[in-house]
Each structure stands twice: as structure tokens, then as C-alpha cells.
Length: 120
Image 1 (cartoon, rainbow, N blue to C red):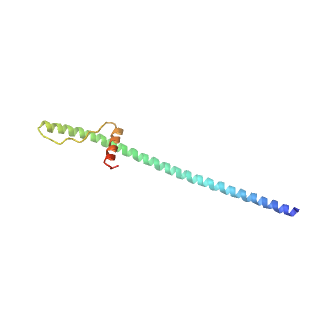
Image 2: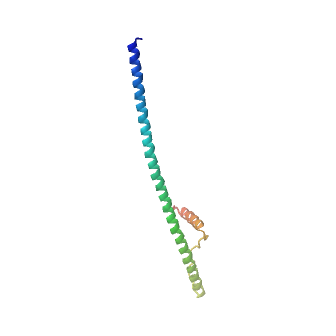
Image 3: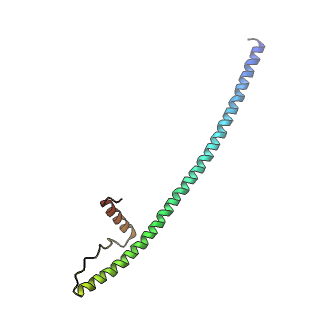
């Protein structure tokens, strides 16, 4: 090989090295940007999940209030039923009592009832 051919070959290799460095830098920059975008999406989804849990918590608190209302109304209805029986009346039977005083037990029982009725 003559000296000019070696020089041209060295220039080609140098240009390939420069091109490769540019491609590598572009790749790293794009990878960084994609990571940033994915991190932002991850945080948005994480917040959405936290909002869902917060909504569930709010509904569970509402359920606890309804459970307390049910217990209070049930006790009142049972007392009224008893008075009607003492007065000689034949009232219909009161509805079912809650199976437990614990919210988790009541919710579990209701879920089973709704599933049995194909409502859930």
C-alpha cells in the first residue's frame, strides 16, 4: 500500500470513530430522555394508585358509618318488634342482624351475600 492509501484508510477509520461517537452520544441522550419520560409516567401512575386507595378508604369510612346506622336502626326495630308482640300484635320478623360488630366481618359477609345473588 502506498502512503496516500494508508492516509485515506486512516481518515476513513477516524471518520468512522467520530460517527460512532456521535451515534453513541445520541443513543445515550435518547436513553436519558426516555428514562425521564418513563419516570414521569411512573410517578403519575403511582399517584393514580394512591388516589384509588384514598377513594377506597373514603368509601370504607362511609361503610363504617352505614354499619353503625344499621346496628342502631336494627336495635330500635327489634325493640319495636318486641313491644308489638307484647301488645298482642303479629309483626313480621325483623331483617337479619349483622353477623359481627367488626367492619371487616360485615364487609366480608356482604361481599359473600352479593356474590351469592350474582350482584358482584
